[in-house]
Image 1: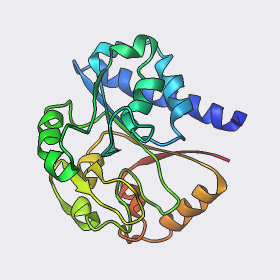
Image 2 (image 1 turned 180 degrees about the horizontal axis):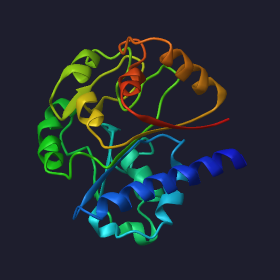
Image 3 (image 1 turned 90 degrees about the vertical axis):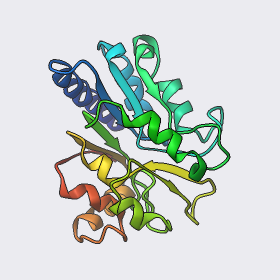
Length: 221
């Protein structure tokens, strides 16, 4: 990994650390929402090394593939392996899957599990795909309009471009967070973000939903 990407991960971890500390000064528990994929791994490791009262921190995911938690495609597995290590193991991690066969069957159970968390989240750390998706808000998803408009907590998502069904927090729920941070790397992602900044149709590039609130952008080549 390049030095620039490592430095970026450490800067992002420091910003999240400061935000959590600030909120912990006046809240018993705080909520951190993270994203999956390969980009956040160095950030997870850098954040796990921070000294925090982890037992007062709740961690959940912006979205998840509806797979077994042992699957290499599981965002929960990624979080357990790279973030919930050392002192950070004491954090209370809330996964977004349950035992049902489909996310449509499980969404109500997962909503019950997540509705009483310390909302609004202190920080939502978002990623972005080359198609402009963030969380599981995909431009080709049949549920995109619902996920962008609903006041519900979670939406079950099926997307032609993705092999697995997914579950995602709604745009509204993620939007309500106190702070939003976008973690992206590479020139291709920078070009997608530039395109997103030049228009406002969120159905074309769903990341645009979060360009209407203060968004700290963490980018490295």
